[in-house]
Length: 583
Image 1 (cartoon, rainbow, N blue to C red):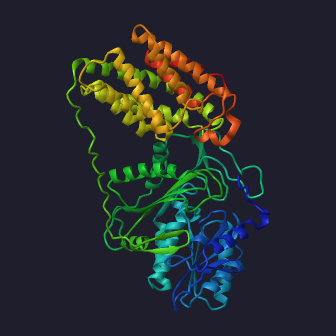
Image 2: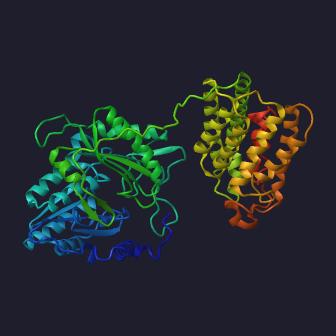
Image 3: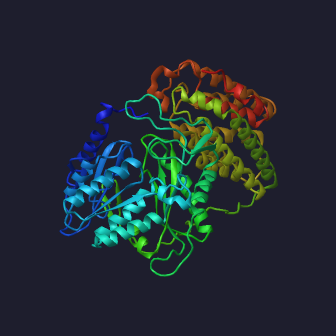
């Protein structure tokens, strides 16, 4: 929801005022929009963009050296008026004519067309390019009816670069139209957007579904499909735009398999999600023998707070590529010039990757197999309880504990089994599991569990079969590492509240180690539940004061689950219940 609003009627103007205030010396306010603070050279072509607000950073954010001379800014999802467009164009005009660039929507076509007529009547040489890149909005044989969406960036960037290079208006216009004819976009929406001052979105998308073929003015997709994985969504988008890949040709205007790439967020998607999509797009393009040129990943043409993404490809020729690569310096779109060829480099080799383990005693290798089985059992239990652990963590934390523990244990289990298969001993197996846990989980839990397993592995070593007391000493070494690294003490409402009672009970127990371990694990589980009666003194929950009272600590609960699972005292089916009553 768009919530930081003074009055809906003033939202668009106030957003532009804020942009100008944020870039003093770069933008200048004028009636209907903004222009460059530094005028164009005498005789240069002025590329003037525009459209409705709600698409930031388009269009006002693109005004600057190497891009646009001015931008006309309408209300939210509403075309600027012809008078506003005329005003911006006259403020930007430097004597070399004006190219008006906009997305092909009915209101924009009418107002920009009327503005062009007004300018011509005043003696200004003016041309227009209406971008129509949305492949979902009309079939190829009716491309003249297509909407302009994220492809605005590519087409208008090429036009701005051509003008900055000193080309005359005829050439700038020709390049803009050619870029438009070579640009294709397809998008998906996972939610609608909410207009400033409104309580409800313009449309909704059911959870687990996606709208395919959306517009950028709050229009839903033209069809609804089940939401797939990120790779499946990337494949859908790429297949849609590659379906219209032109034939290869020679000459400066021939397409030779080089494509400008834009993965665009619509306002409400995480940047990391866009990068995940781009990873797949890049992988498939290269597999198809296509060369991505100067990819862009980010929010460039948005739709307020809409969750979703689009993919744009422009099938480049030499001239289009030259201007797509060219440097520009606008407030929200800056790029340095790059060489014609930038080769994707191979990853730097990991010095530790696939390093064979050292020699290990037979008894230590047998213990390593048992340790790996224990980590696998813990993985299964924690994965089954991950949602419940997340609910507990969300009471006074960020709710990611279950996800992080599950990631860490999956990585640890895989590393432990790989070490066993490589005939590693118990010490090396635990150390590699700890390294994988820390890397896979990240965060506090990853670091602490990684330290615990690494220290325990160092205490065990690979030279002999560990006895019961060796295992107890290794557990104590792991606990000491947690206390030393994390700084928490019993009573702080952390995993330590379950860890210390577990270690003490294990050390004080009598009889065979499995029985001692089971008893100590029950002690740990009881101690974890008892943390519900305390307030957090460490970690993120500390800042929430008494908010966590009545709810046990998620880290203590997960430790209880792990130590019980190691000896088969807890099955995955019982894991969520063992994590405690709901808060």
